[in-house]
Amino acid sequence: MEFWQNIYSHFNPVAFNLGPIAVHWYGIMYALALISAIYVAKWFIKRDNLPITNELFDSYVWWAEIGVILGARIGYILFYDTHTMYYLTHPWQIFNPYIDGVYAGISGMSYHGAFFGFILASYLFCRKNKVSFWFITDIAVIGISAAYVFGRIGNFFNQELVGRATDVPWGIYVGQVLRHPSQIYEAILEGLVVFAILVFMRKRKTFNGQLALMYGISYSTARIIAEFFRQPDTQLGFIYSNWLTMGILQSLVVLGICMILYVKTRKINS
Picture (cartoon, rainbow, N blue to C red):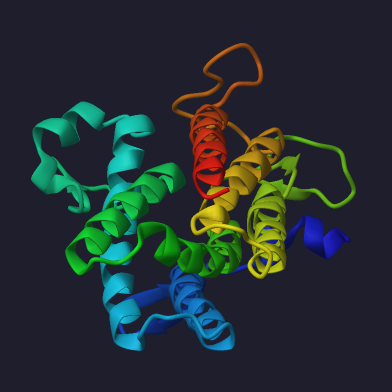
């Protein structure tokens, strides 16, 4: 237990070096997230004999990935970044690691921004290729939920999105403060649990879009729970009282939208 509590003091976030380039565990985890999302989705396409070709799905993956990256970065800038006005007036600098000539790195991705970027990219792809939006997103969310585990482990390795101070025996020291390993909580709740729900329901769904909407509902619920163990973003803190964070607020919005759509879509298909 002592080693676990002091894991950050023993852990090197750099996995290895390729000459002058340092390869971080964070980057490796996110690469694994992308690969696993594609692999899991394709595995279920083949297992369930779903009517979509590899070529069409591969094309969709590119659209979805671009939507996720742009949405995640723009979402972070709009809701979390202290340089918001700079980026709004200099949009071409969004992926530039330098601000006013000073290296700042490209840090900051918003899950909810990625979510809406994914929705928009999926809609545009389906409209262009005359594919059912609900059909293809039902496939995608199974892979996304599985991949999410790697994303949160990447956050853990990168020592970011840390938990709130605690005295539980499985807490970890971040600096001199014992904190909840909230990234691991999120990997389990928002990744493994949501993935298990979707896999269980995939053969029991009664309409296209049921899995996609269940993903939005179950993820948002899991995220709201996890936020009570996660330290609020330093630059924002609590939005209201001592409980409402930006993550909870955005999750409540997604939860409400998905619940309304779930009820309406189920009625249409009943």
